[in-house]
Image: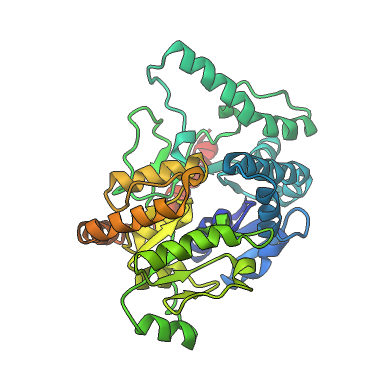
Length: 409
């Protein structure tokens, strides 16, 4: 049986796409190993995937919240968080190397875990890219100054992987191509959402989103009563941006007051520590961990940070958005939603205020009918795709084509 491994670190949004891909590969008859933080064992194994722990036994979401809480600047705190995770990735290379041994194929996730180790072992790789800005546009005309900036940024991005390469006696990379698959890069986004760049190499393949329709979720009675008692609520789902190192009452107050002033019913996810001592109005409810595949279908619109997962879910399940991006890749997803006219103008995290939220909610209410229709239309198109099936088909084509090529030699 063909053995495939993939490794990823970070919050649930960094793990979930690879759970879905792993499921698809297992159903196709492959032996799949998914490695990540020990805290994700229960989640990954609940999907029937073989799990291997990588790195220290920590709660990565709590650790990330503590790091973010040390700075009021969202960009600086996110950079610190990324540096923290990259240090874990570097320290975990020996574990990754051992788990790569004996495998036939390594799926290199967006964090590039396993790329260097697979190269050392001579194992073929398939890449996955979530942020398409990271895909090289070869042959695209650029100004000289932009080229220099690109080289400097490339060196910064390559630096953590060069540290891993040094562990195996390898020289620093001249370009990032040295840890990219030369055959296949999977982009788990819908072709109805993203147009490929004419400057991408042919190996960059848009598959459609990776998701599954969850088994029918049964909410607790309290949430069910709330949903049945009035009009569809707003859903506040800031994902990793709502994990707290401590109580963050001032931030939650902004949302609660904006909902109150606009007469908006709301379901609030996250803010667990703050909500422990917080008295919400009857028009709002905290729901804890509820699948977006169910929750988004109950909402009128969703306020979210525009991570890859929530952006995809808003489109898959046909709900308009009020985007509040915190970092660069989230800004890119926010602008994507705006371009599709399924979202209001985004609010930069640094500009977040009660007044800005009230204005965004009022804009959503004024334009809701058109944006809801657009969201439902795109959702219908997305559901004609089979993103996981297409990814598995491409992996099979790549792997066996390469295998046959080697045999023919």
